[in-house]
Length: 209
Image: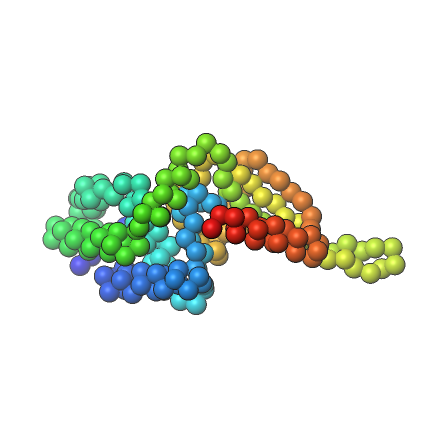
């Protein structure tokens, strides 16, 4: 079976299922995070331990999650894309049906094993709120030299917010390259400041439970 090079869903079915199961397990043990309307429309933070699975998760799993959540999965659109590639002699006629069947199988696996009511509610809120959402967070560690020559380490933190976020996922590896347009807040923190901020965020987290 030939698959166009620019087609998103490149992986074999077994590889996709294994990557999805790996992602689900990472979510369960809190080593991975799936966020909606934070940094990107769909943001995935996952350990770097399995680059093969991570590529499938970032390119395929995340896309199918988003299509499931916003009900945008369109098999006919995929079919038209593949028919254009057939016209360009990149794939055979039989490849179209085989590829569509595999993608449909992948989509159903995501719906049955990842999507739930809580996820739908969280996504719906972020999609429909008129409030701004975090679009970028960047840090830079610096040193300040005081009069006696001693060094004071500090972090420069830059956060940006936007009303609308791009409709694709980013991994943690790409987080430093996110768009920083929109309204920006920039401030410095030392170790004590950060400890206080973390404490306050933990209190907010408890109130949301």
